[in-house]
Length: 109
Image (cartoon, rainbow, N blue to C red; front, side, top):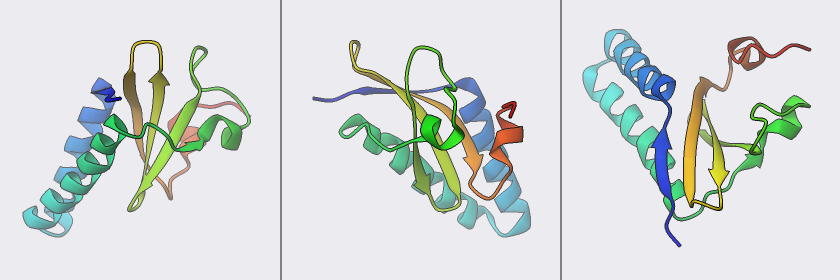
């Protein structure tokens, strides 16, 4: 079974920011490699849409309809939901794993 993988607009924008930051701080080639690894990890969700339960880690649901799961890729968390009925994976967020993602995701505790 192959799932369609979709990226939220904010994920595409974050990929652009990651590329820009790495290309300025290091090199364009380093930025291309990082973006390639992130995209490859996201695309793996076509075949195996599973990760760890991010809602459980947060102690609350990010999405009222679907369980939010996460994958780690280098120093980023790829957050996504799976619509099993329509066979769609929606990548909802891309956040640095060392960041205060509670604040970035605007979660109240």
